[in-house]
Image 1 (cartoon, helix red, strand yellow):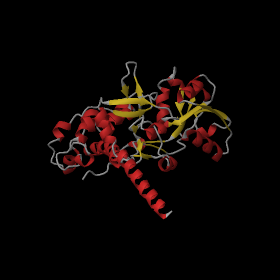
Image 2: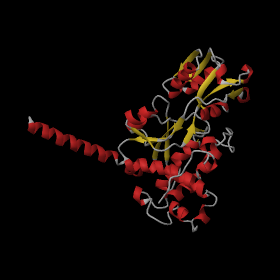
Image 3: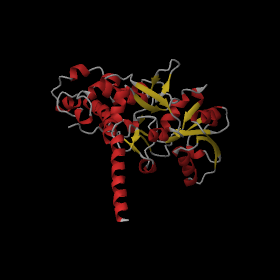
Length: 339
């Protein structure tokens, strides 16, 4: 019996070792196939959506293009996989995608129970409500006894119930399998309000037949830290995804942009020199070239450039930076040091 237990233990250790070795191979698999597989939304204006020609654009799309640029020096080497709220996490677990960059909230249960890891908070968000201006509402606290459209199987659905319960308000929930169905129901007048992350509300409103007829109420009822996600077990790959985000934030903090990258390559600032790979071996430590961050900035710009172009003042959404401003400007985005 003891001999059997020992053999079983050895077999278990070997199996775990093989599993770990396989898990560490994401970067190699991406390089071998010649493209990154990125899970994205596909229906969220400003964040992840293809146009009629099939060209994907958006804030989350830029993030995957940044990873591809870091690896291949080519931001086009990405295959975008449209995912719903129901299948997005399964796609990460199964290996259908290498990274999920799709308005997904980092929660404890998702982080500890599903075999996935969250790399960094790429967008600080919070849940809100959209209503028709004709209702003459000024606060979500006026939604007592309202009918609210929401996508099922999301943290949004749970937050909605918590908000109404904590404020002793009556709620009539109408749930839908997809966000598109929920929005169509709202637009058809089947519910008084539509709820999702505030960023999503601004994106959805631009797609309505009459965008100016709806408004986003001021209340934010939850914390929704949106983060790219990867499978557990490949620390190097998680590092690449995490530091892609921080490189973009660091670049904005240091004043390095897509337009001034060439001149910044000769900067005497040691922080900039390390960021751009002029000094140090920081890219090689992750299996990339040392100019990995310079490739990112050349392809998509720094964090602020991507934000403003896709969802900020340079976009139809015109979302204020808010919590996503740099920490030096009252926000929460804080670049970690490359050294």
